[in-house]
Length: 270
Image (cartoon, rainbow, N blue to C red; front, side):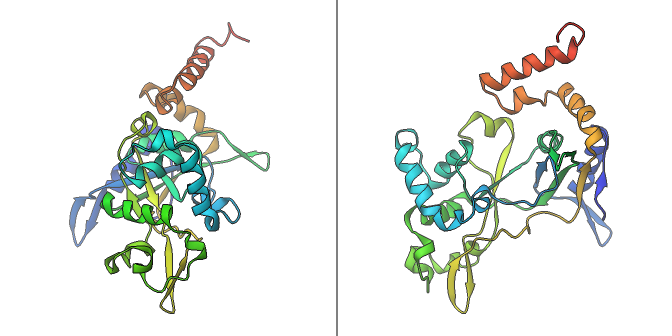
């Protein structure tokens, strides 16, 4: 199936319906869980940690420093996964990739205006399907990140870093995670994540993986033409999807209030 170009919310929701429905051998059924990622331009998908030069090799130092500086804020969190999500929320480079279970949220982010080389860009929405992983397993992987400097380790067995042999496949996979809702933005955006693989195995030795393989999304995606973005954003506003609801803090709500009035009364505001 080729990428589909859509110019309205109605067309987009038809695509969403098609993605939820799967057919094989003449039998049709609904996929168990769908995740979406909207981007304002068709850039490669990569976690912020991997976009920071040698960031992945400094992951342990980044997490250790961040944990020390905000210990007051995170010491009551019951899991390492929650700590990692907190860091992601406040802009620390992490190995998490943002996705959502709400297709309209993904569409909102795909419709944000952005220019590349001085030209407006098309948006894109990716879609993936998978049952989320048990969060307790993912938390075990997060614990390893917080407790071991994997960049300096020669790992001959997972037991060296406190993992059971049963984690051999999991530690080498990208994993969809539906997190505990520990902040308003996650709730508003129906947030979820891809937890990117930590290690790769070669010649019976594990090494830190610093490459994100885009294997969690279907080949099909939807393209939002740049000249349709504004129209779709107005349609989303009628569905209560806008800056004030996607970022439910006072700053963004008030910014949206100003823009809403400007759009409604353009003749009265310079």
